[in-house]
Figure 1 (cartoon, helix red, strand yellow):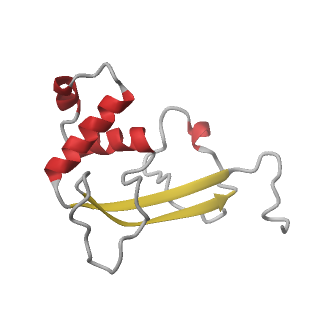
Figure 2: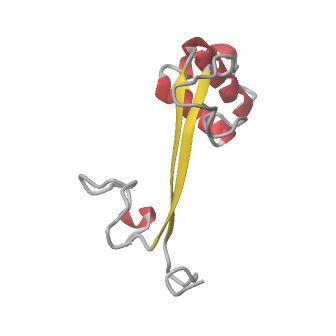
Figure 3: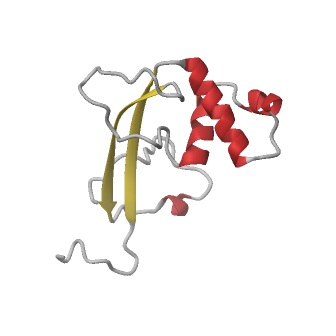
Length: 129
């Protein structure tokens, strides 16, 4: 470890993550999202799950809440560029992922309070970090 990577009190550690998937079967995606929602809330009926999963954002959040990622059971990439997996039960084809560790972002997200400043991009790498 050198001075810039030695953990110190007050150091901010940020992990930026990106996960891409391609929807190959919208119906299977919605079905998987509804099932994930019901798994996280056993009291939820199929009818209520259908009400909750109304668009792609709802489906993504349901999968993320249940599995911590969109396509939890596969590697980050499935092969060559443009090659899609067509037979997954969730209707998604994993299309790559990236993670980056950023040290010493000037402010952790918590320090912005309830609202981020206008134009602030929480995923941008600050020049001083």
